[in-house]
Length: 385
Ligand SMILES: *Cc1c(COP(=O)(O)O)cnc(C)c1O
Image 1 (cartoon, rainbow, N blue to C red):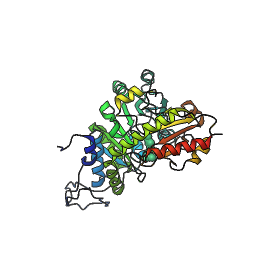
Image 2: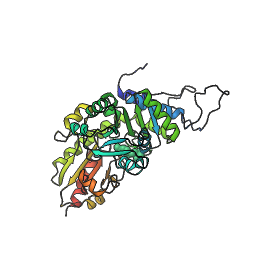
Image 3: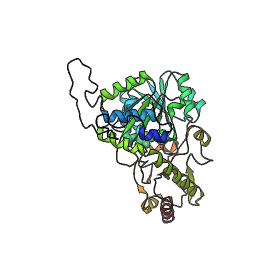
Image 4: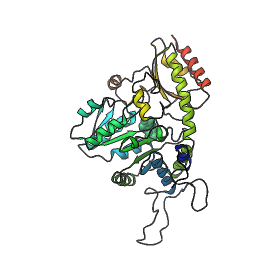
């Protein structure tokens, strides 16, 4: 079909390109809820925008192509996407999740899906042999992030997929931190890929969205049914914003990663910094596995300062890097996982999985790296007690 071979071109030309009616180079925002039908019993291509909308369909085709999958689905948020995927399961089923999944994923399992008798257990998914021992008859899926939030823990996605296949259960990967530009879990054997497209795919901190991609036709049929039945769909305007964001994903991520590699080095060399978590550093946990399954270490970094630095003061002293939830936008953001993104995880569990009160998570933006490093340097200096 295509007149291109490379991912950078697919980001711009993939999915459905342009408008067949006007030849507009961008897919228009089809801001409509319904479509006139030609007659009773004649199958219309479009009938109602919860079921399908041309702008959303263009985005869904694009993400499917980028993840090297067959079918894509767009949702009103990453959590709506995760909720749709979890809706595949039944009372009595249990899902194994990595020990540092996104706080909201933990919360929806712990506080919503438990109402329906769908269980979960938190496991160390970096230990494949240990993980296999946890697969009892009620376990129906393994849900992982790699690198995982917020300690950037790397899980061998191919090994998890093989383990899941061996036991006839699903392997689900939340690929938010990497995006298909850096890592394609379906190619490694995963069954389902999830994105919070709010992050790098949108890339400008101006849209909340979620995506799901699968290769299997039966899974696609079930997800289409769930998407239409539960209705957490992405609107046409937000679909347009995502398509627009994805066009620059390659150039943005190249710069994000270039900056992150420099920032990780800066922090590792800094006398105030106790520990740096970044999968692109050769001494990081899972460095070799990440190198094998992803293009590079991505652009998320977590770190801890020594005890003689006051982290509250550190956050207050930043002037460029903004204290905010979220990640993956063009602007550098910093957050305190223990009180922000992972606050929904109980204190004891947080300590157990390494999300200490001193942990700082950085989403490195695409500003000039000198400005980012100067801001970090200044805030570290101010926070010394
Ligand atoms: C933000 C995030 C989510 C949730 O997505 P929303 O778009 O905020 O609903 C899920 N997984 C990861 C890894 C995230 O970073």
